[in-house]
Length: 525
Image (cartoon, rainbow, N blue to C red):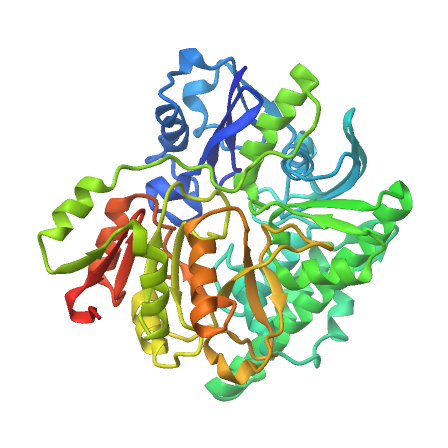
């Protein structure tokens, strides 16, 4: 059975194909349009992600047995499939995306985002939080939190996503930049925490926040920023507001998790929805709730609903025996040999596969900034070794080079890639929060509160796992400075042509392109 599934809402569109019971290819629309978040634009919508997936498998729509999606997808996106698409509830596809990719046969499932499907459409009532229990029979919804949507669609009550958006926009970021606000919270204090209690109410398994509370929150943020004096003081106010938002986000979600555990008594918890792109929140759930095991995929946001819709439809149709699929690397392969041959005739030094990991590790210890482009692209928010920029985290001199390469105006600490499997609460696909020994030796990757974002690299054979092993053998350091292969506020690089263009136009010293290491002569050893 071949299933073409579409994902998204009015942003974060995606597509995947399930064939013979497995997700075989998937891509986010933004990787192809180069428009971050792929926000709905009627004049440019072409559903390129579906075309990409069909092409990758040498299929046409005639080879597809079913087309599915969720009922929050903007209809322009699935227009060409309108006569055959089956639409599922938005939160249900989120729930399927995490449960059916988890290692658990039984689990509680929690879905939280800005807003989901209409529950009473003519009254503009939306789902904002959904709770499920899951087993071999499927997903059973046991509770929904509902919110009221305004006529112009801009505001939804009782929405944790809306609560975060009000603070994010209030301190100066654009919508869908909650991760930037959360990073800012690392430098905050708790002076506004008590006041935030006035902006919502918690009841048994419910988060309540009406229009009055949202307006009061907006006024509060505005007033605190207006009261700030110089730029330095205002920045600290923003950090403190972000800290309060993060504190209360954790408080709210922990409350919901406790209620869900009491209702299900399941030891396993699966999470989905955009708010879980938040490492601090995941660690809080791990440490402060009764759940023994916690899982969330690397595609927590709306793009992941394509995978959820495909697996949900397959389960409903075939009644398959659940087994955990390989869903980290789902892009298509690109030929690179001709590109390498062309570069070999220019001002570059090129190393081949036999010495690739060893030479790359040696160059990293000498302060080289190196791009990584290997094989298929990852599906989800974070690249784990196929589309990355890496460096030696000890090299303070990399800071300016990284700022120019990423086109950043202000400095934000980078994450690290490390060979590590999380055996307790979080999936190995997750970005984690850790504390390094001797953090003063690694200033480029340490947040203001001393923490570091860590992405674990799967121990399965890959170039990145080989590189980390070689680098560790040389430096005695088990991790590398890491950032996605792209400029800030751009989309992740997808093709080898894009990777080479990025390499030539930035301060990268070298580029790993599949089985070759390409070094600029100006940087050659």
